[in-house]
Structure formats: structure tokens, C-alpha cells
Length: 537
Ligand code: NOJ
Image 1: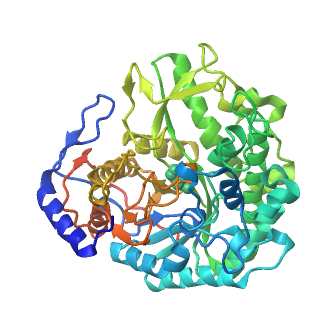
Image 2 (image 1 turned 180 degrees about the horizontal axis):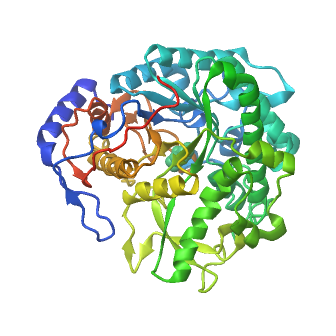
């Protein structure tokens, strides 16, 4: 059902009028939450802090075979297998390819300071390095970037977010083959050359640790590789392929940063980073072995992703468990890998319990090196770690953001960080009405609580430079389809009209430092230190 903007506005006024004291805070696994007088405010963060929202190409663009774009791995995977409920796919997605001007207007009216989006590899290089650049693809992103800059919104560009030309899969097996490193560098080079005069923040690869798990261990994302007991696939080896894929991704990252630093950074003065999927792991019990398991899970995710581009090699603990299965960097590779990020990108959605498998019994899939001999669970003694969402492993645990930021700060000597994604997907409800979807009080509570938690970490000195809500609008949630909604805006699946949710209005007010909504929260400490910025914007 379609809602008119005027109806929505009336709805907002009513809801806001009644919500000076909205209750119903997130229950935190039995931990009671505090109804607070002083919700987190914009002024609790430094003045140049980038408040933004994020999307990715396959999830919003659509136009999957228009203007010279070739088929990518997700197009082919979803066409052949059918993704999401009822075989949904990203063919049309949010029709952003044709509605980007409207979407930029929407961002502008929210007051966003930055927009994180990704470049569709097969739109600008339909045949990877084996063919020409597609000028229409370049034009599309130029128009986005130019219009963002015109509106004072910082373009925060992810070079690779899941999708690549299918030809690279068919020719040599994509990320399983070192040739993919050369293709990636060529792609990144094309981006720097075409857009680098205006883009000051680059992310090479989004969530390599999750892509390897979903595509090569569990086999639920393309290229659908796995082995038993993880699943039944036509090809794959769940115990070792993820290690090779990660290795190629990390080397692709390192080579790209070398190129950027040598050829572009001196003129273009941008920053470049890498983003990982960062769960916070908490011990399931107070036992020493569960504490060690939680630490191990962090190392097997955060350390796996960021130790090589910061320290130049994998964590020793991973070598201890994987032995010769873990690839090695040559001395020359170690050299360019080391210190190859300007900032750390944290995608954080949840905390989860970690249980040790070396001393107690676990499922067959957890009791192996690729999982660090750690089983994860959202439940302790029948109580969930936090309120569930529509994503199976995502629970609402606001303290997790402070904990993960502290962990990253301590492990990497307080390197600049961005929270590149944080968001809430409302539990799926059958036949839900649009009026209910846009009245997303829970999403506001979520962001308030997580921002308060972030402010706490920053109050203790963590160098965090920005926070991006996932997502600007409801979009295609990979194999979960369109019913999992993370957006600040509802998108009508027939007309593609965007309807601001209550959370959009809240974010707008928050960014203006004018939040009227007094919801749940944790007492927010005032920031003691204001952060310095590498770039004034
Ligand atoms: C992280 C991924 O980067 C994004 O593509 C996805 O939609 C969100 N997590 C939510 O699952």
C-alpha cells in the first residue's frame, strides 16, 4: 500500500508529539535498560565527525543489464538459483540507477555529511581487465559524485562490495586465483583515475571475512562453494578455500594501496581503508576456556582482516591452529602489506557468545580450525544476549559497539576508525502495513543506544571519525531478499517511492543537534577530547 508524504508528515507530528517519553526499551537479555533524561546528542561527538548512511551497488542500483553493464556474479547466482524469498534478486533493486538524484536530495534533506556507496565493477569494466572501460558506467558515478559534492555530502566510496564481472569467475575462478589481484588493482586504478579528484575516502574491499564465510565456507553466496559438514555444494573445500580467498583479497588490497600511495595520494590527498565484519564476541561462561574462545574468535575475524594490512602478517594464533594451510606472505609482500591502511572500517551489528570447542563438545562445523574451535550462540541459559532482529545472528546489544571499538583501539594502537555500518532490521512480520513499517521506534532506540555506546568509547579516547547507518533505504538484503529492512526510508516495491520512516526524521534532528525524542539510552558521557582530523572538510 502506498502512503502519501502528507499523511506521513501528519503521522510524524503525532508520533513525535507523543514520544517525548517513549518506553519499550530493548531488553538486553534480562539486563534492564535505563530510561534516560539525556539522550545522546550530536554535540557529544566532535564537530567534524561524519554522520552518514550507506548502501551498496547490487543492493540498490538495479538496471542490471543496461547501458553496457555486464552480468556480475550476483546477477548470475540469483538468476540461476533464485535468491531471497520467492526468488527475489537485485535486477531492479531500489531503481537507484534512475533515481539517484532523488536519493541525493533525500540525503541532503536528512543533513547527511557523508554517503557510503560502492561502484559496480561490471558497470564500469564489463570484462574486467580483458576489455574496455564503459563510459556510461563512469558517467553514472561521476554524476553521483558531482551531485554529492554539490550538496556538501562527502562521497565515501567502497571499491568492491560483493559484485564483480561474472567473466572473472568463469575465466579463472575469481578470488580463488591470484589473477584476481591484478583485476582488482586494474579496477581500483580506473576508479582512482576517474573519480579520485573528488573522492577523499576510499574503501578497497567490504567485509572480506564475511564474503569468505558465506561464499566459500557455508556456500550460501556466490560462487556457492562448500564441503561437508558445512553444506552440499558442487565444488569447494570449506576448511581451506576461505583462507586462499582472504589471502588474495588482502594482497589485492595491499597492491591497490601501494598504487594509490605512489600514484594518486600525493595529488588527490585522500585516505584509504579496509572494512571488516566485526561481531563482538563475549565468553559464554566465566570459564577460562570460554574467555580464551572469545579472544580467539576476535583474532580469527578482526586479526585475520586487519593484522596483515597493519602488521604485515597473520596473527600467530592463526598459524598455530591452521599450520601450513594458512598462506604465507613473501618478504616483499609483507613489506607492502604492512601499514597499508589509513583507517579501519568497522561494520558492527551484534555481540554474540563464544564457546570453546577444544575442551567441550561442539557442533561438527564449529569444532575445526577454520572456526578457531569456537561455537557461537546468541543464547545463554535460555536467555538471549539481546533482542532478536530479522537477521539470524544479529541481536541488539548496544554495549558491543563500545567493546569492539575498545578492542580495535587497543590492538591497533588507536588507528583512526570509522563505523562504516551499524543498523537494525525489524523482525519480519507477515502482512505488515506500511504505517507500521515507517513507525520504526525500535530503530531509533537502536541507534540512540549504539551511538551512546560509541560516545562512551570515544570519551575514553578511541579515535573514531564517523558513523554510517545501514542503510539509507530498505534494499536487497542478499539471500534474505526485500523483507529484511534496515532502511531509514521505506521503498515501495511497485512505484519505488521512498517514504521516510520515523527514524529518518530522528536522524535529521539528531544531526542538527535538535533531537526531541527521548528514548532509551545509557547515560552519555561528555567527550573529554575532541578529535583532530586528517582532512578538513
Ligand atoms: C553488511 C554488508 O556490508 C551489507 O551489504 C549488508 O546488507 C549488511 N551487512 C546487513 O546485513
